[in-house]
Image (cartoon, rainbow, N blue to C red):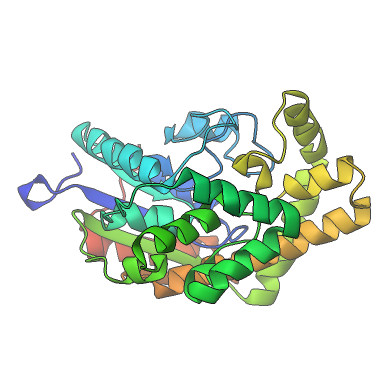
Length: 323
């Protein structure tokens, strides 16, 4: 039984930028500690979006139970509030069955919201305002909408990609309704965890990470990213859905629709993924309680694993027990 005083659940968390090597390490740790993995990725919830979101393979998911993968069709407007609710319920369910809850992912706000039980704004909504912002983006472009946010909330604008229209509009809407900036709301969260919390962050030399990102994009293409996007389009899932504005989907849609050459689409995807990784690292650097492990020397997996074992032993008082 994985437990602590007063039966306060232990929660293990593994974060880091895309392509840093979270999946391999998470599978090993889950086996060693009897853990069940909760995906901390805002895109892996969508069915049929496998290659572009770098989901663990079906074979890998047979080795270790995974949660919050393939729970919605791509037309569902998944939110951080829904993620928090579902992930919190899973943590207590997994803990209650004597297993270790283990969040693995790179969507910073989603992961942080669970670790510290964020209270989200109850400011309501203004559908007319949302429609107005969406129309503005359609006429002037995604970058112009992001610039609107940058003028009132530069911190939030820095953390969001121009393609992430739903979150940009929500940040604008919060300011419109309350006069408060989303970034300021996040800063005043208590940042006190209801769990016995251990957060491990993976990092590596920036040039090496960018090289791995480019190799990841090439691998996704080889594994059928274009076919995956074509299949989604045939099912009626176009760029009007937030899910299809994710990295790897929007660029390939533009190629398939003749808006970009193949070479331009691939280069744009690689560039945007590099920028995404930079924003991920920026978010995690502002989080507290993260114990960083530099995995630049990719051949030293066992040494990196030993570092993580030591962190978990110190924070959660748990020993490795192969299952």
